[in-house]
Length: 393
Image (cartoon, rainbow, N blue to C red; front, side):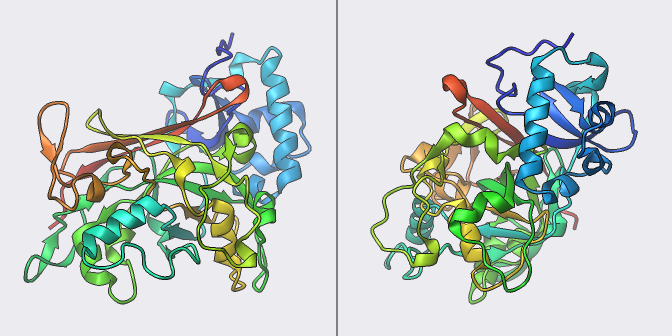
């Protein structure tokens, strides 16, 4: 018997999708239900779903490409079957499976959508100038990342090496390795080159939501960023949760974004309920260091996607775009050590009395998140965790 409490954060209201294997066997598409993984491919074959062929492979891409009608039909079928008397033979305890990257990532773009984070960074790096640059409230600032270094939660992260200035130009392991607490969005339905995605069409293309840790080597990044932006300081690793939560699961988490004091251009308008009330928690070595609130993000995911495609850039199934660091107005809501330690000036004290300005080798960073669900019962996003390993020198 599969017994999952009605208020379980991974209950019927969540049902995130992932990729799993058992005992070194082949990868298969699964759905998390409580503390179990349901073999969706086996269920689809048994029930002779019209969409069974979409689950034949090891990743979600074919299913995501099928579009909103298929997503809704499968979700309804899953909920109906799980609410009845599900066959326990199709479930495996979560502790007995290996989890893999749930999608084949096509492209990766990272934004800079938190006004508080951008303001903090501006004050740190431009203390005598304006915190926000002139373009920031006119468009979602972003950079193109590296899809090949997106890794699944639980993958160790090797401290990167590169050039930095401290105070002379030198080469070696990063001394200012940082985490960035972010929310990511996975594209299902592609577009052709030349097409644009309107704010109102966001849900026709985006399949689901993941947690993201976009690791950052602050010293390498600072030296290389001027004038073209991040490269090696960001491209070494981006960690993504193993579970993709469907957008449909977040209907009760929709909120209005913060008030904007600069009018946006027409292609960025019309997202009055496009914010999401997602509460993130970040720990280092089990000690909570931050609780960033995603509802405070100035630029919404719908605006980010509209801006990403307004020049005619195409979308591909499996594209991942992330919000950038999530930071709220209070110090304990800042989503990076850059802010929490104010670029190393104010060390963060952990539960065991140790202090950090930036990450040390052996540190494990874990991010979890919840969002409001039906009846006020919270639902969970999959966690994203990673441990820092020494540089290869």
